Length: 258
Image (tube, rainbow, N blue to C red; front, side):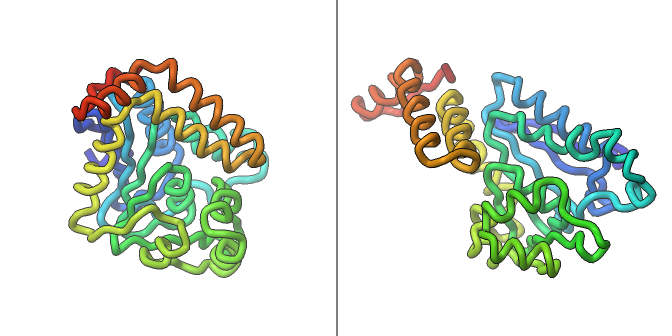
């Protein structure tokens, strides 16, 4: 199955996507990004799925964009084909929580793909960098925009301008990742986290993800208003009534995801 750019499976209410170009350290080319986008949208549309995990191999989550595929592109090749925007941005359409399980290298586009996810669980071996400057290029899949929001301007400038690589502990300290776990436990613990999240009410998960994302892209006043309206909408949710009554009855809630 090495000719299949991704491997897709499920574990309960969790959709699993494994990047599968081991010989290229999961370098991200059009075929892989097309397949990844299609899998993400399929899981997002599946009512049996509540959360999605993207992972790579022990050596690399993804070692950046496929340089061999783009080295001879000209301006009209990328502008005319809507390079990156056409398929790399599909993940922005996904409303369900997306977790990245990162071991080994997350370089360039691989780092940007991880940044596009809602939660990054990093193995101790994880390494993050945006080294495009070494090729007289620049991050172009959101790196110059999402990284400053995650780690602040100073650290983002350092990483983008000097190609500085962060290890897992530094990435955790700077706020780039959500948590760090031993390599041997990466998949198990990410799956456990995704399973926990997927077990909660899906309408509430969607509302929370949308509200947190709104905080990145609006003023505080607009974000607070959006959050308040989403909170008010929870009172129309059967799951919210079930959750509150289960709490009062001292029992486990039985969510129906509506």
